[in-house]
Length: 262
Image 1: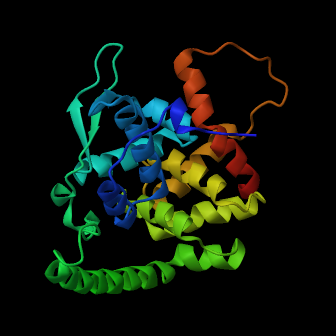
Image 2 (image 1 turned 180 degrees about the vertical axis):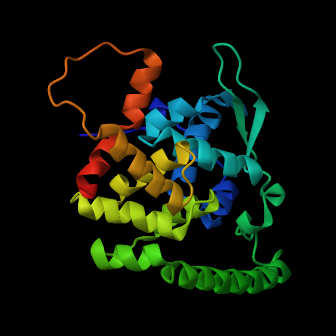
Image 3 (image 1 turned 30 degrees about the vertical axis):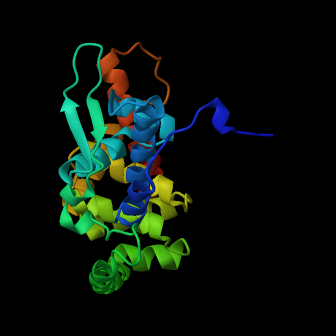
């Protein structure tokens, strides 16, 4: 039975930081990144630390492309700072920006700490801001529910959780289309893999390959069929270069998707 104790080590984080972060509009992957960053900075009583994206991906069981994508957003929003670039045998040095006043406006949460007597005027302003934020969130949720991928997911997979919706929206932020997400979901259904992680794997592969439109996805499908058409069934296994092995791994999803296209 697990029995963690502070005596064995702990990470000190100011309550005001926690309040600002949990009130911000972040995805599950972004929260994981911040957890890793806090653990290896504040957990060692230091402001910054060299942390590679591959390490974050492995530690959180998250696809490396998702880590890259969400890390770039955290840096863009001013929540995470890149102190120095990666070098030989050294990862990027990262730092959490605890001054949430510098965060991108849409990611900044109202101040929740402080005395009620000292902050009564501020609290009134925060209440108005909270109401405005709530209205924006309701409008955003309505827009998300109206998307084609949301309707398809609900009809074929079940309840669309906020976590899955956030991850799907992140692909739209990366320039992918609503129709493309539906195509990935259709492939998951066709392969009897009715879970989001399978469809997300397809979308990540497309993202890495620069496939950001339905037309490109269909073209890739045709190319795969042409490449495999007439291939002898009994062929001797040959050795592959490191580059060829990487390409074969990337094509693994295409092999699974072919089952749906037959």
